[in-house]
Every structure is written in structure tokens, then in C-alpha cells.
Image 1: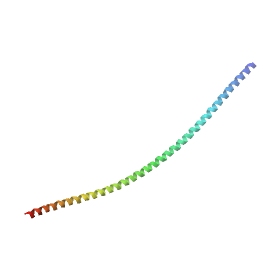
Image 2: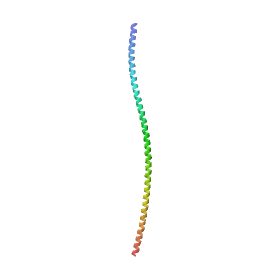
Image 3: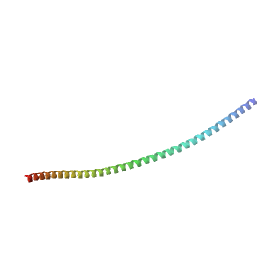
Image 4: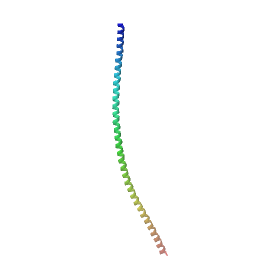
Length: 120
């Protein structure tokens, strides 16, 4: 019976050794997992900062775009005003040119009439 008890104790020692080995493996795995979780937390923190930076960049771009859009509109209004003024001047010149052409035609008509009268 003592042999059986000793054999049982030896088997328990072997089982305890295996359990210690398993616990050591589990501790190592847990340590690796903790390291992985820490790395993931760091990555998430970095990503959050990157997202925040991107949001700020987008807000800045929106503001700059709005400013450029407003400046473009102001410039287009100035261009339209200048274009309208130029068109008015061109229309005025055209009117003056048409008037001069008409006066020139009347003068030519008078000259022709005077020449006919002087020939007679």
C-alpha cells in the first residue's frame, strides 16, 4: 500500500510539474497578450491623434476654401464692372463712329450735289 501511495505521490509530482509548466506557458502567453494590448492601445491613441489632426486640417481647408471663394466672387464682380464699363465705352465709340459715318455720307452727298451744280 505504501508503494501505491508513493506511486500516487510521484504521479502527483509529475502532474504538478506539468501544471507548473502549463502555468509558466500561460504566464508567458498572458505577458505576450499584455504587450500586444499595450501596442494596440498605443496604435489606437496614435490613430485618434491622426484623426483629430485630419479634422483640424479639413476645417482649415474649408475656411481657406471659403476665403478663396469669397475672394473669387469679389474679383469676378470687379471684372464684371470693368467689362460693363468697357462695353459701354465701346458702344459709345460705335455710336460716335456711326454718327461720323452718317455725317461723312451727308457731306459726300452735298459735295456731289455741289459738283453737279457747278458743272451745269
